[in-house]
Picture: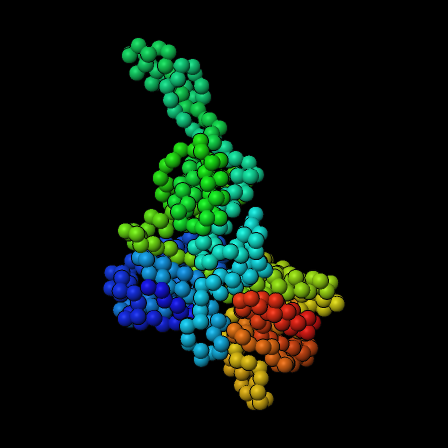
Length: 459
């Protein structure tokens, strides 16, 4: 059974697959998601300190509710696809009939091309991922290309501690064993020693080899060819079944830090393979991403590309200033607090602009003037307005922008509203802007051109 739903959708218990409906199954699903939640830092840092999973909300026997994470959950062979809310054609559109994983994947890859929040070293996203059909395949593709590029840089050798009986003293000699055991048994030429060997057959390579063998029959013919070449290079490495916990014991030097993401992704694949809730021929896996990070990263990267061509300097996640410059306690200075982190800061023609992305549904700025006033007064969060106005005050600038996503198939509004916050020290202009975020199949250039025109018009 395949379920397609948008973010923040309620799924009643009787609409769930049969194997998910019991309280026991829902508890197992919750445990499964919790394990994957704890591994999400492999792909992104969402800034959430909550240790409890936030992928889905569980409402007991009433069912589940999707949150602001998009992607795929496969549990006991049943599949739930979660699509961005902006895939709707308008706020009231609840139809999922025209949703497809290919369309989601196409957008996902396009967003990653510009996304500064999710970094994939060694991978050219557009070339490696353009043929992927689902999120599992995407991550398999990422993983094996990490491994391939790491091996191309040089095979991984590591000192491995060994303790053996040998004919000559090497490393640390166990004198007590020699006196008690060897002399009494007449083994005068045997010495128990502990020493290090620089080995290719080490735990890191064993984990990689085991993971690649597990993925071999789960992926495309193209990826299978890459995996076979990897396995050929790892032919001298022992075949050992590895557990997710084996990855936790790995310690890497700074020289081999590029292997860290390989080990982390290996743990994720082994975790899904070893799940207690995977049985018979049924799969269970979970690949979910926070949409607000994708929106922020994509818009930031795209603006940086467009405005850099115009001679502007664009900084993403700029954090050089603090809301409080110093804390004084009992006559002592304790330093600054509350770092201000701007999604996008632009220096252009001797002026500074701050742009803040907000992944929220805001109605079109079009129609009669009273309707536009209502939208600006009610739909943006008041705390977002306070935030950017404080940014402007601290930096002594006049223009700040709140950037919201447009719905699917929408055309650019003729104009955008500007809120003026008056002050004796100077007025602050808050610009409310909606940007295209969804790429339509076979018409990607149109979205890019429309987005580029809006950005250039703003400046």
